[in-house]
Image (cartoon, rainbow, N blue to C red):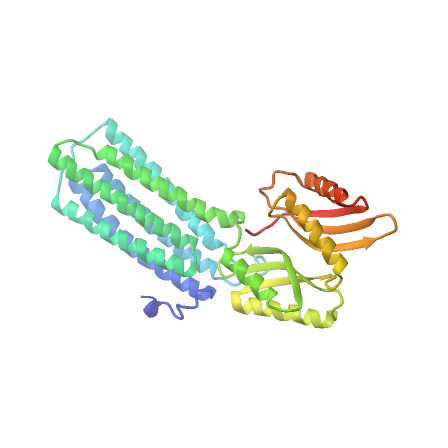
Amino acid sequence: MLRRFVKDYQNVKDPAVRERYGTMSGIVGILLNLLLSLGKFIAGVITASVSVTADAFNNLSDAASSLVTLVGFRLAGQKADDDHPFGHGRIEYLAGLAVSVAIMLVGVELFKSAVGKILHPEEVAFSLLSAAILAASIGVKLWMYFFNRNLGRRINSSAMAATAADALSDCVATGAVLLGLVVGHFSGVSIDGWVGVLVAAFVLRAGWESAKDTISPLLGQPPDPELVRGILSTVLAHREIAGVHDLVVHDYGPGNIMASLHAEVSIDADMGETHDVIDNIERELAKKYRIQATIHMDPIVTNDARVNARKEEMLALAQEIDGDITLHDFRMTEGPTHTNLIFDLVVPRSCPLSDEEVRREMARLAQERDPRYLTVIQVDHPYID
């Protein structure tokens, strides 16, 4: 299907290709869910089963969710404009959130209907046609689960992941409905309402899990560790770069990522040549990872053994406070009575000490090492894992 309907399907970082993936997923979802809804509605009428009818409306809401996904990918593919200079990529996350909310609303309605059937039970008729429709529906939904899961993994789409999760919950829900019909027919015990409650619980759980996956990137989650490693290795592969820190990655939607970082360079290097190196690195990152990178140069002393020794000394002291602390932008100014040590510490958010407590503890450890040491410390926190 990808080869036939998605042009250039392997170039998954291209927003236009992502839009074609979303279009295919949305159209397939709308058509299949409408057919399933119609079939289950007929089965519900035949059996007078609230759980079967509820499952039919669940599929109808799935068709609406597929329409939301389709529209979301279309809107996300729009180019940046004056009102949205960072593009429209986050609409894809909003589409996934809308699908999740729709799933949970359906779950609430299913629960209400099922409770009503428990309080006021009615006889449910068994039909081989209805059972066959439900069994076929399970097969179709299982195929839709794998279909959307594989597409979502290819393009790293939370919206498609939500759609896949919904399809899997539908498999379980419809299986429970079918089981309820069979048990009721052969045992004479009506469990239709209780099965409806079970269906509602599965639907609500699927909606909640999908919502969490779409809300996280909207709130701002850590970047992909593989992307972080790639950025760092690309920058540090250039011999002119002595170190990297303060890497921040901003996600404005799939295929629209911006990054900023500080690159340490020798203070003795030619600034014109170094600036040219930085420009080349930014272009290299854009080509390899489709990110817009901004790199700030931090000139540091690299060939002074005494400065380097003090830097390592301060890093060792800092890691007595927390083993995951890192140090950068180290400078040293010596005078007749004291030595100023100026540096930044990157303290993990798991550290129990406040920023001020870290500064005080670091100053105490430094003065214990040498009473002439006066520390001037900027405490930062990482934006990546």
